Length: 165
Image (cartoon, rainbow, N blue to C red):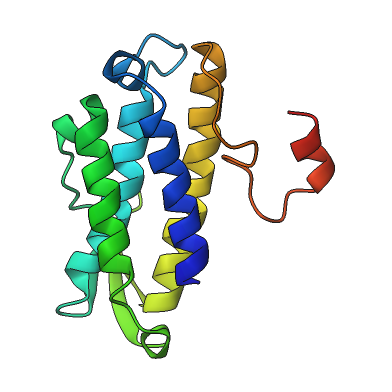
């Protein structure tokens, strides 16, 4: 699990290493006018919520950092990725089944559910892949080439779909 998440996060670093700050922060694409940087920062904030919550076994996904520099400057975004990867590597496989409480705003207020660390990481990974797909749309609209053909595709996506891109 850790290796798969790290590989996915490395894809983000690879993209950030290949684009300018202007491309990273460009929010001109309709209909949501969100930037690559906004999506990347959001993805990393979700992982950060997990790591912050491990101290007391309570993860609150509604309390995110929202560091604007991490969504506007590629070097700050890369540092954030590297920090998340470093924290990820501190988790042991034996920790995956540790029970934690997770809180999130479901639209009508915060709800609390029981998870394991492994299930929270799996959710964050899936969430990241789906945001990467949105980033792929932005990248396409901005005329940027993705450094990895698998960027934004779920591992369960039929490989024929990857070959079309």
